[in-house]
Image (cartoon, rainbow, N blue to C red; front, side):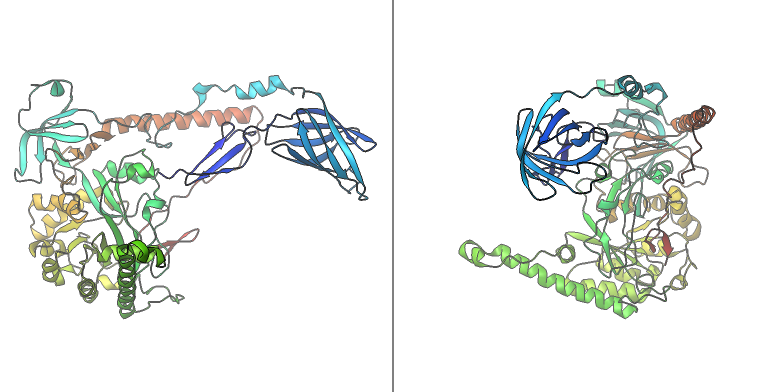
Length: 614
């Protein structure tokens, strides 16, 4: 991480805390001298023929000055190194200022200054006594807090948080029906050993034949189904914002707006979801860069990111991009042809930019020293990564003609679109997608919610899969994401897809689309232990996720969830009692706080203090 931090005199939240240094990318900036002298006390200030009583309070570097007398007057003062400046009015009735400057010698100050009439005088300030402590007993009483009355610290600090972050323990899941998504298919009465965050062994009758297995926590899977975790290829949860209205936002990063306290992370763990692609919205032809997350509930934003994952970016086509529902929009583009021109212009510029950068890097010696360093452009840099196959496109799409157009743009610049998402007319162009190795993330049966989805059919996923397109079912909706297992089942209902192939559309197939199939998406030794233990066939509407593991850590347990619900009810009752006691003790009534309003985002939501559905 970059060395950005501050150094303070104590707890940053203390009233008297002083900021000493502010470090920015490893460079220190001195705010207050850490070695500043403690000047607090009373002084005899002599200015020319006049003598005043002066008081200096506060900590070094955060001093407060005032004159004490029959008519107490505030002063302004500043101490830098050993130099001091003072300004004050001789009395409250006098608005004219005496201005002094000088230097420190231990507990004595002296220097020269000017009176309000401009005449110069010498001045001295001699230390007299230390400040008397005020209301020590009262202050000490304030500091004493009954820690037993405080809410326990949990991660994240909100309902359903954990007092300790779950750890990767050794687990042995016995006698479950295991959906491997591998050649072994669905295994009956099988065992899975989890160790060090990985799947260590898959088979039958894994016995306590070694020390590792002997120390494992045994989970009875009899009558239950064990699968790899669901992967949502398209989500907008855990973000504080998802859209802007620029034509090209390729420099924007979803990594910068992750909200690790979004309760939807926990809710989706309860639905068996363990990983997702957090996407920018679809108000822009060229959207922002994606963030690939594992749902490690309670981790930091950086802790949610999948380390070593490929980089992705969001593109979009159709009504959202050309602002069809916004009559007041004046932003280019406003037609589907204009959207195509945006891509052609952007990639043409990105190719020229990339050539210039490569040419400069290829120089050496005097030639490089004499050449002008090309200007860095973060927007074009991201697009150049696409051309160089270092960043991959997930493209919001609906209409056949635009899907074709986007593939032809990719052909012209020598790359391929990685995934068309939504793609409700994908069945019309599945053969062309398969030829290019383009994948699809689609809805199971969403249609008729706007004009450009009028040709959607519930057989779309089946037909694309039959044509050889790697197809995933995604959510794009916080509520539906908790039931992606049921969304996968719809392809069994509508198209007669096998249960195993349907299940792969929310596990192994999205892992392939995100280039993570070597790490997740199936129950195989060596892969990440992202596992879900279901009460029933996972495609059943009656199935409940009873335990959800991410990297071998148990982040959701249905029994623990029941306990947490009771704890939340108890804590709520405790807080209500404290409020009632405070009211009875005479504390004034306070207005209710609405708190932070939770906003649920979809592709087309643009936020400017509120959500506008465009």
